[in-house]
Image (cartoon, rainbow, N blue to C red):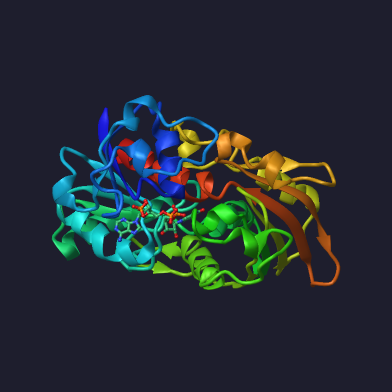
Length: 348
Ligand code: NAP
């Protein structure tokens, strides 16, 4: 077993890490960190647990420590669920101290020597780790996963991008409140309401999507060459982001071919049979009223993206449109980092 720690273990994503790692065949959680508000407390006393599962028994009494590498002993991998501003300072210290950091935070994602990876989409970008360690003189390293709404989008774009000539992508999101963290959106702001703005989300989706689908020459990533325009909105859903996707192609296509590229899509995690890999990363729903977040977010144990209402769009030239749903704190956050770590553990 590999000993692992969770940075920001009391937060929304930190709790998902704990839940998903509870019975993991390769990783054992031996360290939990949070802010100084929580450090020194038993985990059960420090956390406001809000998942349906129970806190795993062995971790209830674990003492939460400060998020500092000197406090985290005998750990090979740390999963980071820290706020971005804190991650920017702290994650490099953990990598410098020799630990492998699998991060959810946006702080390091666009650094040229830090891989931003979705294992089904661009596992080859992990080669940047060697350059990162050389550039920075670190024994450890940082690998990141994208923002929650980007992951779901890019998992559906990858099979299309490989087989069709994409000209432009337009996306309108309906994002769950858990995406903002436990204290993120006050109930008074979201009940009976919709908030048509999520800070920096549109920029992240547009930049990260092109980077993930970019060409990698062994040293640098050249962004994919199509337009992406997004509009991001917060809705009164607990978990599960929904996205309405509109694509303009440079070529004619048949809807059946689009469907077979979704249903036939498999990546390296499926080939390697990694523990957290869903059997089918993209699952098609044929019903007119699916996918829906409450009914479809747990597809593939929360690691698959559901797509539906796949149809031609006659307003855009050679237009395609569909709806997707992905679980934002599983596939879009904790599960994504765990899959990155499983892949690294297997191939490096
Ligand atoms: P959250 O619920 O607010 O949790 C934040 C965690 O970080 C808590 O454990 C908190 O500890 C700790 N923390 C806060 N300030 C700290 C400090 N100065 N030093 C050390 N620890 C500190 O946030 P979240 O939603 O889990 O998000 C965590 C990260 O994942 C963010 O970077 C977010 O952007 C990213 N992310 C989130 C989602 C999602 O769907 N929620 C998806 C993708 C990525 P205390 O309890 O002690 O305050």
